[in-house]
Each structure stands twice: as structure tokens, then as C-alpha cells.
Length: 345
Ligand code: NAP
Ligand code: F7E
Image (cartoon, rainbow, N blue to C red; front, side, top):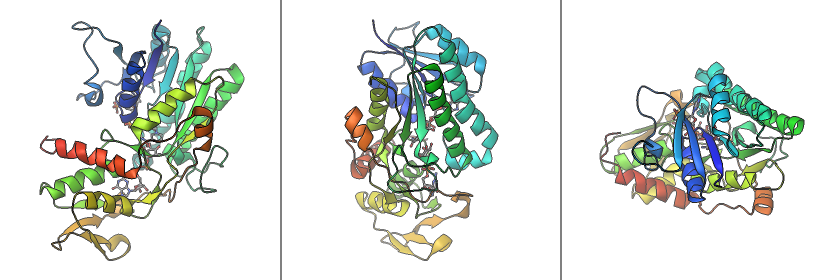
């Protein structure tokens, strides 16, 4: 019989890539979506069909990770073999604005799922979407599974709770539960307010004269950026092992935001000349138009300055390695933006 997967956060970037990957593997996939006043299924519209019209192996249910009743009822009803908890208020800067909600969803949400699994008669495997933001003010470089955590935001602190409660339920109730400690991963489907998508989108629009300027924050933080398509494979692999464990998933390479902008601009044939310092640093194009400007509103109360991971454990045990590098990632994102340039999004 086909395996059943239940995905919390199915409408997000990773939910979309993971659903497509699992469907290709022959899974029946159930996803939880939230009710919104506008449609939020854009990333999965290509795989969803209304079962009243045409049946396939992909089903959607309303639910919310902050609502214990819906979490319990759905798990009881679906009886999945595997649960992937990708649901979260995932924006670090926004977590400073709505810290209580972020903690409810990103910390207690995980507890709600684990509690339902622990009460289930069926053995359900569990994947928790942990984050390199838990390393925050990094205690060593590169970061691996043994690096001490030091979160720098309500988001990072909430994810840290989820990490340890997952370990605790694994040890207390023998649940097959894994923490993926994933570093930044991007794609054409990345949310529009994350820095990579914001940069690629703005520079494509600037190139085709649909936008004049990109307003940006800290140009000097460093990130280890991978492609979501590669990272969802690692999530699945973790749940196929003999024993549950926690894994760092990353590329092992890091770049500044400024380098990311320069790479993207170069690919688009825009030559950026940087002038000024600090908040007054600006980027000018070949016609001396100011196309990039720093704004204090995009800086955070506390920054994670530098992230660079070590995926040796995943390579050894999961036989996982990233296929994409920063250039194939940017190429993929540019291709998508240019194709959709005329869509009024
Ligand atoms: P994303 O695009 O922001 O997707 C988040 C998903 O969670 C969306 O489907 C969202 O639904 C859903 N969600 C938010 N609050 C919810 C709630 N209260 N109840 C139910 N669903 C809720 O994030 P992503 O980039 O795919 O990341 C997936 C997971 O990995 C997240 O937990 C994120 O924190 C974590 N993570 C991401 C990265 C990364 O670089 N992408 C790295 C490490 C860890 P709506 O569509 O309705 O908003
Ligand atoms: O910021 C700087 C910003 O918002 C990256 C989430 O998926 O990855 C993501 O969190 C860096 C930061 O991602 C802007 O200050 C400059 O240093 O794209 P981001 P993030 O905060 O690293 C981790 C692993 C997750 O788990 C999270 O869920 O870029 N930056 N200027 C900017 N960032 C944004 N968003 N917007 C700017 O204008």
C-alpha cells in the first residue's frame, strides 16, 4: 500500500517542493492549509485537483498549527505514516513584531503535533523543520550538529524550543522524530520578502524598466544559501533511516548579501558601482542611476552576522549532497522572474 504523508505548511515554498517530490515517490500526500481571505495555494495549484472533479493522490484539509483541536483531529483522521512539520511564521524580522504569535506557531505548534503522535496507536515518523537561525550568534564556524545554539530572534528561540521538544519526545516516547537543521534555502517559489527573492525580483524589474530602485538592509551579513529542491530530499531521507537523528543541511559556502546582489546584477548585465558607507552606501548602474539604497527599516534589532554549515554527517549517513550552487540557484530564480515579469503580482 502507498505510504501516507501529512504536511503542515504545504502551501509554503518547501511544502510545494516536498509535495511534488513525495507524489513522484508514489506517496499519498495530505496537506494542511489555513483559511485566508485570499487564495494561498498558488504554489501547489499545479498539483491539486478538486476530488469531486478528478481524484489524484494529493488532498488538502483546513487546519492551523495554533489550534490543538484541528491538529489532533487531522492526525487521527489521516493516520499518516510520516508527518512533516514545515508550518511556521518563518520570517525572522517579522518575529520581532509578532513574538507571541511566532512562539505559539513555531514552538508550541510542534508540541501539539508531537503530543498527538505520542497518543496515536499508529507509529508515525516525524520531521521537524529546524533552522540555522538557532546557531544565531555563532559559537564556531562552520556549524555542525554539535555546535552550541545561541538564537538571536523570537523566531530562532521558538525553533530552539521545537528542536529540544522533538529530541525530548524521541527520547521519552521512542517516537521516530528527526530535526533537520536547515540553512537558508531559496528557489523561484521563495516568499517575496526574503532577501534573495526580493533582490532577484527587483533587479529583473530594474533591468526591464519596471522598477527604479531596490531598498535593502544589511549588506554585510553572510548566508549559506542552497536550493529548496535539494533540501526537501534530505528531509525525506532522514525519515527513511534505521534510527532517528538530527542533521545539518547546507552547502558549506557563504556569501554576503552584497555578493548576492553583485552576482545577480552581473547575470542581468547590470554593472553596479558601490559608493558611500554604512546606511549611506548606494549602488549605481552604468548610467550612474542610483538603483540600490539602504534603509534602516530593513535592519533587525539583533542580526545573525554569519552562517556557514558543515553537512558531513548528512553526506555520510544520508548520502546527501547539494546539487545546486549559488549560481545555478540565481539562474533558476532569474529565469522564473523574467518569465513572470508581466504578471501583475
Ligand atoms: P514559508 O514559505 O514561509 O511557508 C510556511 C508555511 O507554514 C506556509 O504554508 C504557511 O501557510 C504555513 N503556516 C504558517 N503559520 C501557520 C499556522 N499557524 N498554521 C498552519 N500553517 C501555518 O516557509 P518555507 O521557506 O517553506 O520553510 C518551511 C519551514 O522550514 C518553516 O518552518 C521554516 O521556518 C523552516 N525553515 C526554512 C528555511 C528556509 O531557508 N526556507 C530554513 C530553515 C528552516 P500560509 O501559506 O497560509 O502562510
Ligand atoms: O535575510 C539581510 C537580513 O530574511 C537574510 C528564513 O527562511 O533563513 C531565513 O531567515 C539576511 C539577513 O533570511 C534585507 O538582515 C538585508 O541578514 O532572507 P532573510 P533569514 O533571516 O536568514 C533561515 C535559515 C530561516 O529559518 C528563516 O525561516 O539578509 N537583509 N536586507 C534583508 N533581509 C530581508 N528579508 N529583507 C531585506 O531587505
